[in-house]
Each structure stands twice: as structure tokens, then as C-alpha cells.
Image 1 (spheres, rainbow, N blue to C red):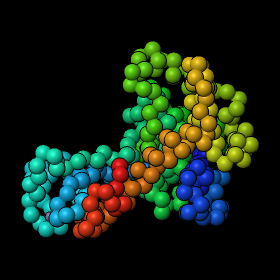
Image 2 (cartoon, protein in one colour; image 1 turned 180 degrees about the vertical axis):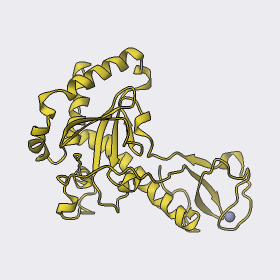
Image 3 (cartoon, rainbow, N blue to C red; image 1 turned 135 degrees about the vertical axis):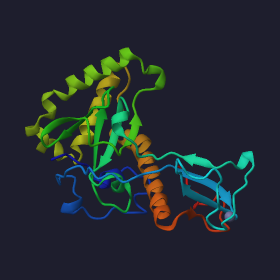
Image 4 (tube, rainbow, N blue to C red; image 1 turned 60 degrees about the horizontal axis):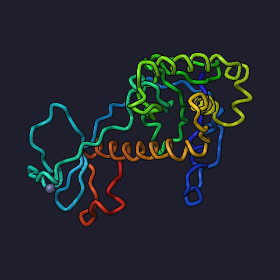
Length: 267
Ligand SMILES: [Zn+2]
């Protein structure tokens, strides 16, 4: 059993929340529903974006694909100048166990759970320097070496700060913090009333480290709107395009629409 938080809670931090009201909370979408993480992993590829036929076109990147690029709209081999070179868009959903000292978001339904159309709940955790993920669940704190292979990753340590010494301190902080009485299984119920107990654990740890470094803590609103939501939105857009390409071979904007239009996606 794990602790999850619902995208409904995230929606509360969106500036356009009044334009797109969240669906009513039901038992199946409540953050209180215990679930198991799915081990079924969707195969995700990087995207390739280029302009041809007056459109912006997205295809998937295949490592062993042909050396030339063929436009899926007109069927011609694409010859582009250097300034028009295709852009590779890395998948925003990657292996959380390979992301040291990060805030991770995963879903009970694998990557598909990040889609805005998917009502599944999310689960968050904090990785240590070796890719073990600590998260707060109904059974107390879990430390997992598997299960976070498809995560949205928010790095918490600047590359310049990423010394062996800092990593050692990080791991020590995380180990000690996860043993606090606040995060025991029997206190899970009272934490759950706030609607996002795994989120509370992860954010409290971030603020614990920030205080120990002499920095001001970050509010839930600020962290959610500045760091979590933008990445969730990118992941959702990426998934929409990826799914469209898997079904139809490619995704493109309409003929008259160029890079400045709303259909040219920002990743
Ligand atoms: Zn073309």
C-alpha cells in the first residue's frame, strides 16, 4: 500500500484553475485510495521536431533509424539548413533511480498516469545519492530500489554543489529524517487528512535541508507552482504527442500554423 496524492491537489495551484475546474473528488480519485505502483513500463522515446510542408512535425527517435529524415506528410527526404536542424526533445519521464538527490513524481499507472486525461493518483519521494527512493506510505517510510523507473524528476542539488561530501550529508539527513516519529505508519491517517502525505514528507525534507543550510524554507504553494506544475505540464504534452505518434506515425501542426502558434508545443 502506498500513499498517493491526486492531481486534483495540484490543480489547486494552477493559475487557470477557474477556467478548467477540477472534476469532483470521488472515491476513485481521492488521495486516500491506497494503490500499488505499476511495474508495467510504457516504452518512451525522445521526439524529433522539424519544419517541413509549412508545418512543425514531430516523430519518434529510433537509435537504429535511417541516416536520412523523411517527411511523413509529403514522403520526401528532408533537406534542412543548419539553422533548421531537427531538434531532439528528450523524454521528460526518466528513471528516478538514476537521479541522485532529487524530488521524484511517479504514478500508479506508469507514465500514462501523467497524462491530464488520466485520473490516476501520483506518488512522490526523495532519492538519495545512490538512487534509493524514500517515500511516506501507509506502511510508514519505504526505501525502494525499484518501482520509480518512470518518474518526473526535479533535481534538488545544483551541479556545482554536487560534491561527494554534500552527497554524504544528504544521505545522512535523509536517513535520519525518515526515522522521525512524524512518519510512522500509525501517524499516516492524521497526515493523510491534509490530502498528500507523501508530498508532505518530501517537502518537509527539502525544508529540513534548506534550514540546515541556513536558507529560508519554501512554501508548498511556491514549490508546487514553480517546480512541480511546469514539469507535469511538459510531461502531459509530451505524452499526448508521443501517443499520437504511436497511433498515427507522426504529429504535426496544421498547415498554416507555425512555431508561434499555440499548436507548436513547448517542451
Ligand atoms: Zn514534407
